[in-house]
Length: 165
Figure 1 (cartoon, rainbow, N blue to C red):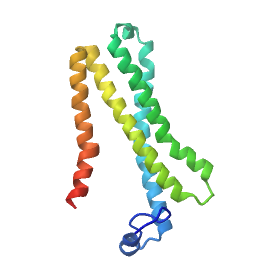
Figure 2 (tube, one colour; figure 1 turned 90 degrees about the vertical axis):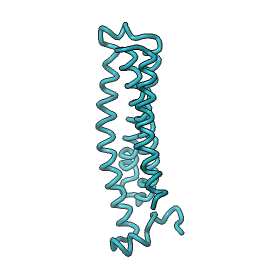
Figure 3 (cartoon, one colour; figure 1 turned 135 degrees about the vertical axis):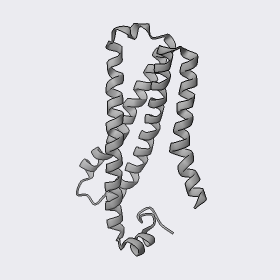
Figure 4 (cartoon, one colour; figure 1 turned 180 degrees about the vertical axis):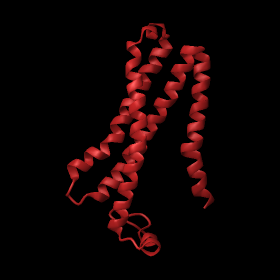
């Protein structure tokens, strides 16, 4: 049984990896940072692209539905950017304050929240693109397909794996 200050799987990590709880936290923090690097790059590119759209000549052709989807999508993308960068900002403030456990725990939660917002932004981009090119009904269908794929790979597959162990 673990409390909030003890890393998960501390006993297994000690036996199988020869790690102390502090070494496990260090490894978990480095793993989280690597994941954040990948996520941040994608979400920042997406956000940058979205922020340029209103300045394009054909943006005036976007439907009212498309504009609502655009605003929701750009908002989700910006929130995802903020959430995915937040652990790095926390690290700067908590640096040398022996708070690696807090960084790993809170950073993990922020990363998950950032992924949720990134997922919303990705579904929104699909809806916006298909709405603009084909129409709102196709945009909604394409967004539902993207949402289904996202939920299958990001939520159902990991949960299935955990249950099958």
